[in-house]
Length: 314
Image (cartoon, rainbow, N blue to C red):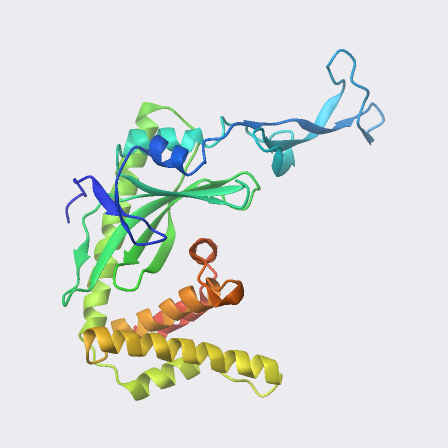
């Protein structure tokens, strides 16, 4: 498998072809390179109690118990942490590391909420054609947060270009805020090797599943297994299960229309796609919220896809 040596790529959320650029340029365009401050939120007096002391000459006295993460351009509070929380120069450290490791490979940056979390994608490996026009694009995703929800990590992820299904893997590495050259070099090797290894494993598994026929009847049984109707469900809960089964069936029929006879890879993508586009990414009015779906995928909230994969690979 070759590294991705051109300057084109795909936006992870939309699937649109984009020009890969520097991490700083992509993050700046997304509004991710804002400044932050870390004001103290509480102080400890000599008796061990908590108080906000009088400021004299612009200086607090005592030991701060906590500190805020404050976005200085909007004055939004992004997080509250102990006084030991490491301070950074905004999200620039992600841009610095991503660009130093893999220059001009950045394809997208997503800012969640008011800036409490971000995700930055890079394409390091060429797209993989599974046959019959079914193409997957391996990527890596840098994530970090100021609200404490996401540790700074690098994930492997894959987009299926036909349906824009997003398969988020497990962390390749947990990142420390370091500028040590040896550490950065080791990090680069680990990320690249891990990304290639997982992309090859996914492609091999996909090809095996594509070779195994899967009928409409089998798919109906699969949806019943991943979306069972328990006897104690309320009418509303039962209707919700039926709706989710219908989402899976619709995705399956779309797969059949595009690729013809069914197979296990198509069955997995039908369930995974329905969960991503119609359940996890469902916004008010029934529209699709790609950011919401991506957030749930990173948070490992994809039980239907996981169950389907387990059943289809037995």
